[in-house]
Image 1 (cartoon, helix red, strand yellow):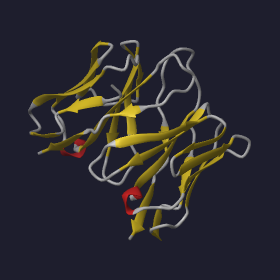
Image 2 (cartoon, chains in turn green, red; image 1 turned 90 degrees about the horizontal axis):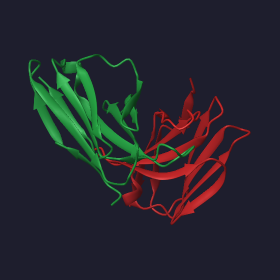
Image 3 (cartoon, chains in turn green, blue; image 1 turned 90 degrees about the vertical axis):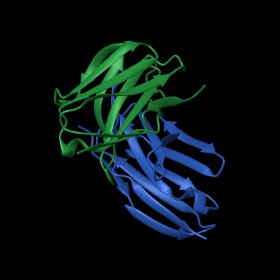
Image 4 (cartoon, chains in turn purple, orange; image 1 turned 120 degrees about the vertical axis):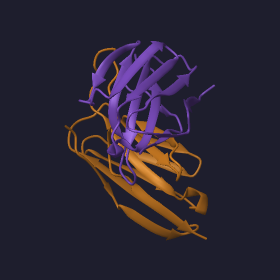
Length: 114
Length: 113
């Protein structure tokens, strides 16, 4: 299994809603990533988890809250988002211990904040 | 922070043509990735390079570490190759941890039948 599965594929939410994005992989990867991608722009790194611990937070607003409950699962909890947070949210995973390892991406969650 | 430049930004070619996309970066790296993104979002990792050359089917990727430059070539291009091709670099290795990538802005490739 070389897949990274993201759910939901599409999400529409209001600014007062609380929602969660989910990412799952069963490749034994111990590094997992959240990226945000606006239309026609490259992905921007948000968070990196290594061995279920948060290792990088790229100054992301606290309305985005990541969680890594186990080595296969990565969540992104959303609360009080703004319309400018509308974007494609991509999850990725890789081997953590290798000096350089291939990234596997999910197909993303297209988020619209109204 | 690494600066990753890709050229060209947009490329339209006829089916069968040989395609070259270039990537240059400013700071030494541990690895360079070539990624493909089709409309609709999903990103596929095509190659990861730290030196030399790799080939997979009609795709060839090369890297010159001294010149801080990489190229992605597509031979016998086909309309299904139409996508955005993104170069991304990983700078260091945090001793067992994981770090993210710095992405180029992408090359939008259209192959016309």
